[in-house]
Image (tube, rainbow, N blue to C red):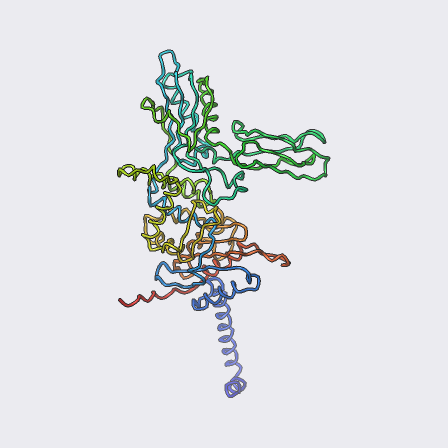
Length: 534
């Protein structure tokens, strides 16, 4: 109380000075508080506790969290929760595929698609033989609409003087040995746009777009359109138009192993155009159809039929020593394929990149004089063997990353948070791995993170791969803290269903994002990791 007495007894001029000092100090404290809020919690020591408090909320009682956060700058582990436990990673498994493909081929590698013929053109403009379109695994064929791959090849053939092909167009997709779906993929996914066949000869990302509109009057069949039109499947249309205001309930179904698309249900008059994407059942044959249409545009007719060839069948024409190479086209650089594969989580791209590694492993074995025919190993099996070797080489224990496909669609995939952060640390510290890092979605900016963490401190500070399947969610990548420290992190949430009784339930992805925002708002740097004594 003595200090208070002194102020009370002081002259008015002194009181004014004290008041000014107190006001300045109060303002300074308020500004510091705002700055701390903007920069984040500067107390690094509370980060683990804050994350632990978040993941220990009652709504996660039946779920499992796997978390690891490592500093790229100091090597220190900042957070670890169930870090060695195995979790289903969903699409964050694509990180392993991307790293392997870039390590195997380099960012500038391009994938070929080639047109051959079994005979050379005669003087009369006829070519008495087959055209053979061979795919070597490019998943991007037809994606870039600015350049027509089919017209490029058709023009090349027309320039040789050919006006008539007296033979077939053979679409050869035998470069990959094995099924056209990844290990562990579910049958229900195989008709969908995200579970398309992974084929050596692909076109338009192996998707056909379906446009649905009501018919002219109630009772009429709905009108269907397909894009590209030449890739339209066989259709059984039982979708009926109903009165305006009626129920619109549209179903599309293609049974596994069949080609017919069943469209059924109801669509009300006045309903706007409805759009869907479904998987092509025979991408190679679709590519042959596009090539024939392009040849017709260039004045080249084809008298024969279209044929597609997949493993385990073999096309004898490709092994003939009489093949004449007409032209080749190349894919975009591998770095661009990886970028699209990671940015929007494109399953076909990443599965094909894995298969390309497997095919290269087979070619390497043949070049070394090894018999690769017995025992038989699929292209995917060879790729997974090479993946295990790669992961072991960067310090990932054999049992901590059990990956079976390249896209992450398999629920049999398992990985630990430690395995993911080990990969991220390896890829995050070398200049040559920039293609890997730049391919990751950026929070609030692009890819699968376009609308996530927007207008939060994480925007522009988080680059990470998302992963989501039913009851399985993950996020793994890089963070830059408010203090400028670079972090690698892996967040995995398994066996989680959003509580039904919640008044305003948060999406499961928001639970991961909340932790990523915490990382972005750390306001102090970590100390260097203590190295173990030799």
